Length: 474
Ligand code: C2O
Ligand code: CU
Image (spheres, rainbow, N blue to C red):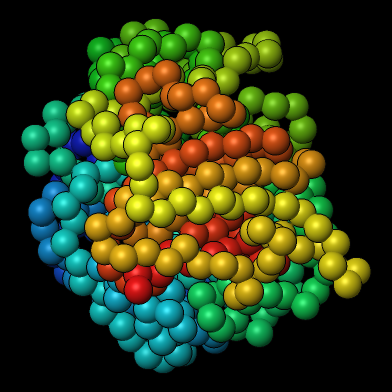
């Protein structure tokens, strides 16, 4: 299949009918679509999808494809999303990064009851903050995300300049065996992050198929461009591993992270973006180098080789693939960037509340657990706040080998310092922050969105093995 969709090219609007297709085993054709408007219907159901050439896996889907449809709304709109559950298990939807009211956050046992098989639930919220977000199940989430219950969510800014091409690439990893990453199929309860009783040794090498928009290798749809186009690519990591994404043949700018625009982005050449689970990066470039070029995960193992899409200039000769360099590239240092006009906090100001979060990997009773201050959820100490508190959180990764991409629901936080040094750039706003082993970050936010919110590692194996706490308004 070919055609403009699937990278989810959207810029030329009236897109609902122009998508490329992918096939399921029963010969049926599914169309990953873009849904716009103020009322959206999502049905969760079981399906099959050809993930890699000749490799069809059982998947759980929204509207019959992985990823589910892109939801595309306008800033300021109130959107209604009707979820219908046709799965054999309960489900919910969390709007990752979107500052929704607490009751719409999709956390089973906390903000709503899980939606039982055969039942429906309507989410409704106003979309005030433009940017690139995503949605995913938050019920038994380590397994349900792994099976494919996710999609992208874009809020178009009121005064946003239109680019010529607007593609979305959702990154993920799969197991060709089709097995789930843990056997915790109990359905989960509180927060959808049940502490599994299984040994959580999580050998990540079991993920041997890397995908872009649910497809690997030659199945990944091309991204058509023409000479002179301004191209935006929205990268979303829906998997449990970090990926080093490189664009060949072009200089690019990182224009946003976690949906938040970056102040004065530089032009970057021969750089890679390291994108951790749950994070988003939007990049932009001008198509000024005709040919066929890869945007790909920059590594050497076989699975990594599947995570690539071809940027194809219209009219460029097929086979003129120049993208096979394998040089070592530097990762973009995101701590140099930030957003203009949002310097809400400084390192030395007085905060109403300070919380230290020591993250660790420990053996307890013969089981590998992931702890916050020595405890696993639900025993972890919540961050108890009152509305309008200014909150400073110190995050320290004491794990020897694990990254911990920490995600706070319902709020953006400002990153104040990294490893003792204030951030160089203008204030960076994030909702998901990756800590490498030994990293220490200080972040701050205003408690301005009442409710009970999760703060957890987005390697959901770690979350289900304890690395979760809550932000609670008292
Ligand atoms: Cu994207 Cu609580 O998660
Ligand atoms: Cu983690």
